[in-house]
Image 1 (cartoon, rainbow, N blue to C red):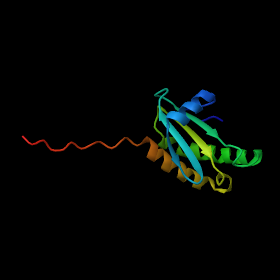
Image 2: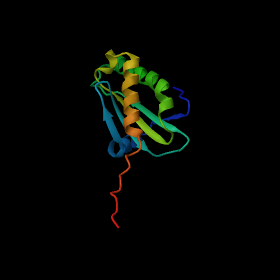
Image 3: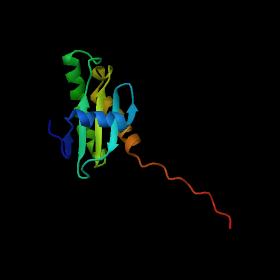
Image 4: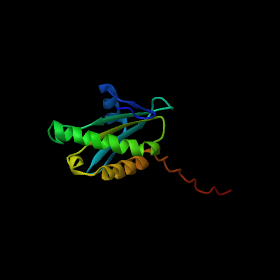
Length: 124
């Protein structure tokens, strides 16, 4: 699975770190975990599907859909971030464009800079 400028997350400790310390976004098709860190010149990506999704055939289909959606959405993801995409039960019945739309919304939500707090005017 070659992705342009993305490194694959394989180590369990990386997954656990993201699950515990990362931010998450949820939709009926996909759960996304994101956290800033790692190499500033790369994006690191992990894709997983639990047995709740279904048997091996359904899990592999879900992961293929997510991989295809990532290839299209990768340009929207900033460098220096780690992402994990978790398939949900409805992922296998979805079209790739639906998964891609959910992924794009999650990336936008999770990687947006925090809103700046406005300072109250100081009375002199």
